[in-house]
Length: 191
Image 1 (cartoon, rainbow, N blue to C red):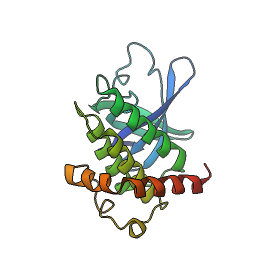
Image 2: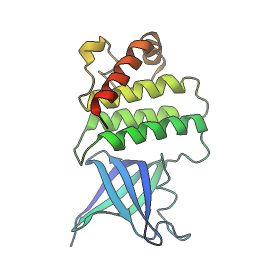
Image 3: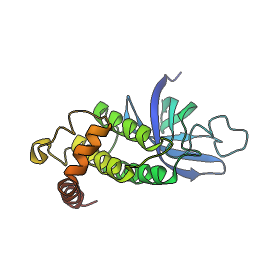
Image 4: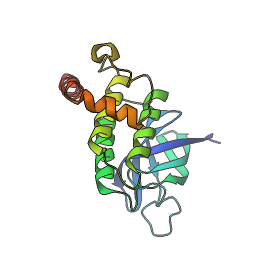
């Protein structure tokens, strides 16, 4: 008998496999980046289908089998359906970066919280600061993976994961410096 793990997850990417299956890239609170297969999730009668939309947040049940992770259940926490398209697009770009840079499973509470808070900020009804939220989120992703140094930027943006108004004002004031550091870090990854 296999053990079932319950954890919060953010759906970063999905790839169709087989006739009705999908393999999902999930960033989970407990395991980091997990690639898990969901059987028959593309069929009309699938109960997990709505919970596993791209850029959504869900509570998932995972089972580690001989051939990797499998999704045994999912319930939606925050859906991207019907949300502002600019916020969804920004989070999709952040998701793509995370999938590209994170290698394997590794618990990273800071990265999960940074992604979770960015997801919450970008899925609000009206968003004025989409670009600034995206810049801060990307900087925090790079910082959590060791590509950016908080000391080099001399900012308190990396001591927390909030996207409140004072934090976004601070980011707006140092936008050029953040962008320069982000672009340099991404170029140095060679990915």
